[in-house]
Length: 193
Image: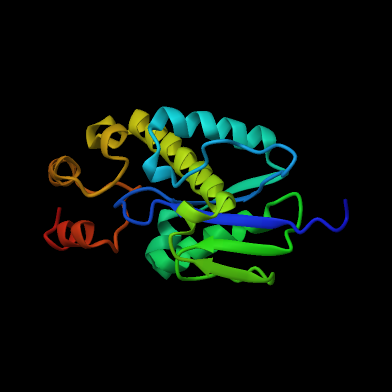
């Protein structure tokens, strides 16, 4: 058992939206319990993502989900906040991996051997699993946010800068959940909305 090389996949969800935290997940899969159908979360239906997320939480050797807040995003920028959320997810794992594989161009500073893999969410199953957990956790948080602030329509656009979201921002103003440093929000604030 001791000589198994533990690979941890890491991905984030929610870099593009104008509202809400950025989410990251870290997953160490269990080779004894393979999960069929793992793929980039963006290529899966919502139903399939939810189904796989439940399976990952049951079957993975270890998994963790972490966030960086709207305040942190505005303070240190979205890239740094994404890396912070990723680092928090890796640090929250119940097992320490031997290697960390991250989707994208940059590695969070985890103190562990790490590699960034462009399109890793499509090519590395551990990263696919992380992408599914991050996306489903963030979507659930956006639905909860919708319950609190239905006027913004978060259930539909999940915080992304759609025409409906921009219209709602113009109508209702900028909430505490909005990222003040993001272009469309900043513009509205400058216009005194």
